[in-house]
Length: 568
Image (cartoon, rainbow, N blue to C red; front, side, top):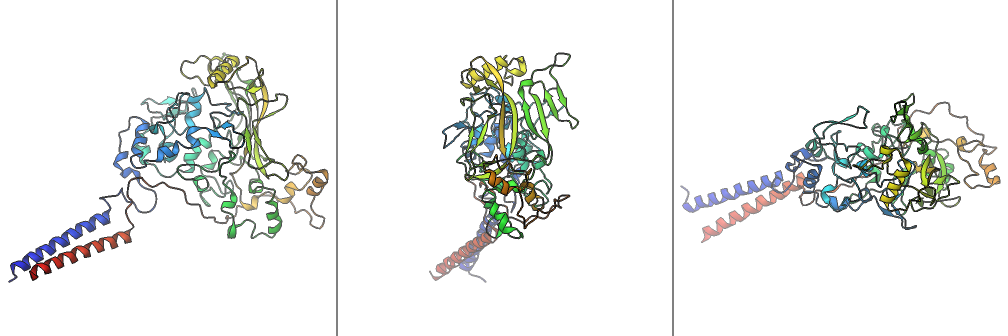
């Protein structure tokens, strides 16, 4: 028979082993200290109790997100996406959507309920919006997936939450349903092309209005449209190139911003033209040509883009005295009583100009010369200063203050009971007086319309290398590049518009070569903020070793405690 001491020792050892097993289980499960561990890949947020709802308003979702991502709202609120303000470090100008004017929607102030449907916040309905409230940061617009979330176009940045569907635009037949905030919150992951595109594909009030190289066809482009973003090639998300730290987005064209360059990836053993027979000649061109100049032969290759907007013809009514729209054979609006005449084009050859990285913008304080087209974006550069880039050259006829020779801010969108909005009273003078007063600028009481130009640099819709611009497309008398306008002398133009005699021009390609598989460039890792104040579980192997050490230590201590007791 075992002695009482032996029985006590065995019981002590048994308790020690049992305790060790419990500790091991806690380590391996991670349930004591960690959020749900789903292994590699996106986290399934449907498992988080914080996102189970109910959510009465979208701000409730943000509050739930901030329980883990405690610094995220503060980070977003420090970005241009939130402030819509930027100070140019060279000119000192106050820029951003709140301050610049353009020739599509013209200006944001006094038109907030419509314009702020692309703000990363909730409730930006007028200039009293409080930019310091963290709960007003919209996490869902950048992170919700599967079509679960949309902002209402005229809702000051809010989604539609009423039980009854809402038609918008009025008379369009397009109904906006109530958003399921729980489904949206539980669907979140890293931003996709669809998230970014919900605003950037539809800037200027509609699909393909503004950019030329960004529209709805870029959500899942064919390889021929974009070799980087196509799901059939490298499937780049926008954040592959534009992800910064702390929710800052890199690659804006404001002066002083960190640029996103092709050379960031295409360098070293991935340098361009390495496998080309004309490698030396092609690479020499990069001293004066941006990569995009050859590799984006046309823009708007997936669908048409708006190329001109004439506000001076707005205000016409039909025989019944009501505003109307006219569409072309493709279904695109070419006249709208609210906005005037439009021109749409597809497969557009870019406008080429020098750019050294400095861009000047027009604000309502900028004095203009109405006798010539007004450059609303002025890309700085010249021969020997910068590189030749491709641009969308967007023209317009835009209202201005004829007494002060400045661009005017019109009150277009009816905000509440405001009687002066142009889309309510159809009176330009009243709309301009209201918009200028709201914005804090003096209005002379005289207005007119002036020819305007807004240029957009083209960076997307990179074609397969086989479809890049060929030598003879530029180096001929009637080629793509206007060398005289680019600052070259007559003698230089003569040399640049012919091929060397010993090197005859190759025959033009009849049909574009089939898209070749592009050289695989590893997608830069997207910056992903870890959940704050939540310890991530250790990897499987590390956790197992920790648990094993704990077990051995406990058993070892128990054994020697038993030995010591026996010796007493």
